[in-house]
Image 1 (cartoon, one colour):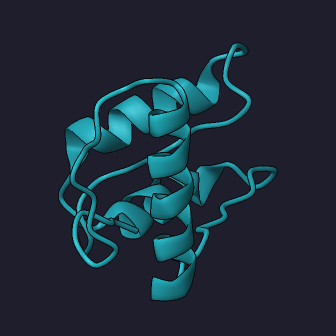
Image 2 (cartoon, helix red, strand yellow):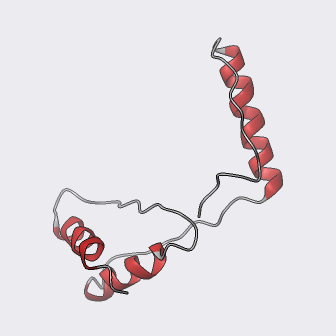
Amino acid sequence: VGRTRELGRLRGALDSSDSRILRVHGLRGGGKSAVVRRALDDYHGAIHRCPPLPDAAVRSGLIETLRRARSASGLPAIQLDAHAGWTD
């Protein structure tokens, strides 16, 4: 994998008694899953789950819900696109 710094940070968090859930995020295709699997090699009790990216219909519904909530709160509208800006 060649991601020594990221592996060290993940393993440090896994060794910490304060960590229960770790969230790893980044751009699609950036190697997040590979780094997590590599970090978990020595942690047999850890569980690794990668939630799937919502399909376009679900993304559209989420965006519409956000728009309505912002409008109801008096917040200014923001540009959101159901096909851009989603990473998995």
